[in-house]
Image 1 (cartoon, rainbow, N blue to C red):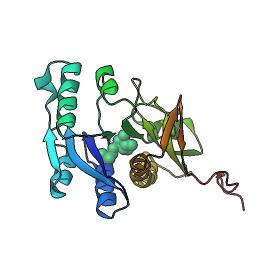
Image 2: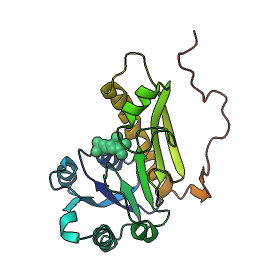
Image 3: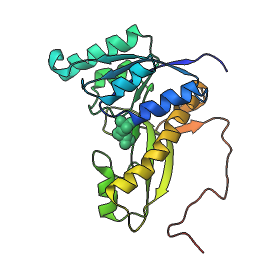
Image 4: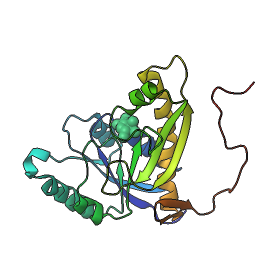
Length: 220
Ligand code: GRF
């Protein structure tokens, strides 16, 4: 299977994507070692999930760092100490400084609950409903210095249904998040992701398949 990639996961909240990653490691679908989980919030449930899996769970207090870059320096120091190669953002609610992004260039991933570049930022399931799109989904992307702007690695699409609420659409998207995030990290671990400009190419991918489309409403 080759060498496991050392991962550091940054979180702020409930950590269901962290859980999906830890489960994928346990089930050997993901050849990674989660070396540390770091939160900017002391009460993040994700820290409990990490501890339960005997993964180091660290709270780093933003107030103690003084400035945004000061905080990011503390994060980078901790990630380096744990010999982290790939940084995985999983519901981490802070924007990274250019210093952080440079420190782990092309080695930071994020997951976003919309089909980027549609609906960057916050409350995006609500925005998708308000806009009236027929599809939404999730995007795993490499992180650059913008907000939700980096090169796209994987997207998964879900239909938006007539009776959807923000909750039901979020739920449908989240189920796909839990599938694609471990998969994106595994592709990285296998050395199969090549970034050229804005495009990410996956080596050994299946190629053209005419059935890879979706129509909403579904044809009879
Ligand atoms: C997910 O919807 C993710 O796409 C977004 O923040 C949420 C985190 O959820 N970036 P969880 O903490 O992984 O459950």
